[in-house]
Image (cartoon, rainbow, N blue to C red; front, side, top):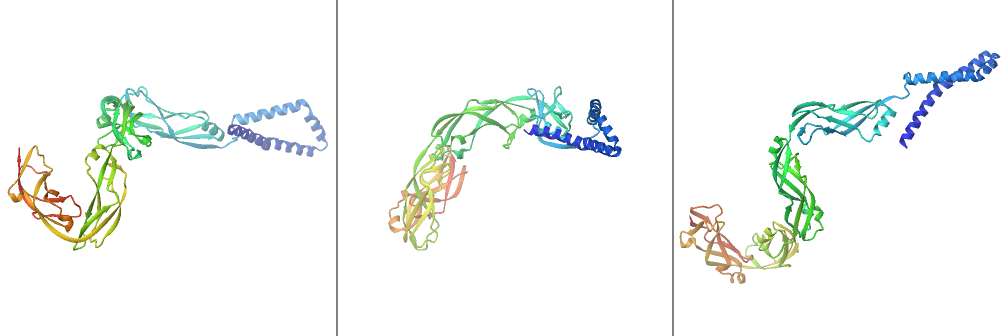
Amino acid sequence: MKLLKAIRNFFYGIWRFIDRKIIIPITKLILKLTKNFNGSGRRFEKWLAKPNVLLFVSLFLAVVIFVIVDQKILDFTDNSAEVLKDQPINVIYNDEAYVVEGLPSDVDITLIGSRADLYFAKQSSTHDITIDLTGLKPGTHKVNIKYNQALKSINYEVNPSEATVIIYPKVSETKTLTSDIINQDMLDPKLVIESVELDSDNVTVKGAEHQLEEVSSVKALVDVESLSKQEAGELTLKDVPLKAYDKQGNIIDVEIVPSKVSAKIVVESPSKELPIKVIPTGDVTFGKAISSINISESKVTVYGSKEALENLSFVPLEVDVTDLKEDSTYKLELLKPTGVRSMSVNNVTVDITLGTVSSKDVENVSIKYRNIDDEEYSVQGLSAEDVRIPVSLKGVKEVIDGITAEDIDAYLDLDGYTEGEYEVDVQVEGTDSRVQYTPKTKKVKIRITKK
């Protein structure tokens, strides 16, 4: 419809021009001559009414109009310009043998011509813009960007009109393929991706030699967003895209063969039921101690990776009791331990009651050693006082009375220690969080030897 309307407006404009510039002036001239000749006007009308005269007059006018239009003596329309932005470029070269750098991704085309011609040009479905590298050898070349316009009556300008490109020989190299799982947060929190098996272990990477030197890894990007409603089980994802990366994790633009792979995914829902351990932090007011701790939920089922769950024996819940003077109730959020994605309980209520503080010493608490390789090293205390120590307890009397040496862990953290004699800080912890444990011997001397 737009095309028909443009054609109609074009011819209507020509007709108005002819009517305004030719027909009306000639008619006025004839009327003026008729008035001037008065009586002779009848003879002129008779002469003008003859068929041959009208035929010759019409022929004369047609010839005059044809010459005016053909020679562009009068321009019926004004020239204008249109800019076609971000036009894609078709590059012609042997992409099996060469890699090309420096190519612009798109260009702007300025079309100059009559409005009618510009209209037809813009209606064209394609604008063929090409860079022809046929026959060029490896090296640096300056090449023209050509536009094959649809109408020859239109002038055009391409910006940029040329490009400096570098042609490299294409080489190939085999790389190990690994997987990278993305959008894991879209999964049901109770699910984990247990394993990913790709249908190919190696891929061929093609590109310029300097590009392949930058490739550090090739990964299959396994997008699990589509598995948001998936249940535990096994499934296969097809058309998994591949990307090449450098050491800094930046994407390297190289050809990867194949460009996509399939991935077999095992989805599981590991869980474990754990006790909730309340850990008071800070000291209650002077003369007081925690008598009892009651929690609304004593156990919680946690979901996460198998490795994370294996290292968990309880879920900690810290309660700040600094300067606590009276019985109190706390409503707290249960924080997820590292590696846990979901828990059956997220909020709990803790009731803490206070009593009068008492103290007690527990003798002969054995010292243990942590974070040292027992198969490579042996540890010995230099004296009896360096092997067993007394520990001071503070708490409500009925609580601390039931605590023995077996309920207390005194230990040395020997992470990073090797052969030699050392004086090391003693650390103490106990099974009852209502009690404060303090080693009465702060440091002990030990000897570490290789087995």
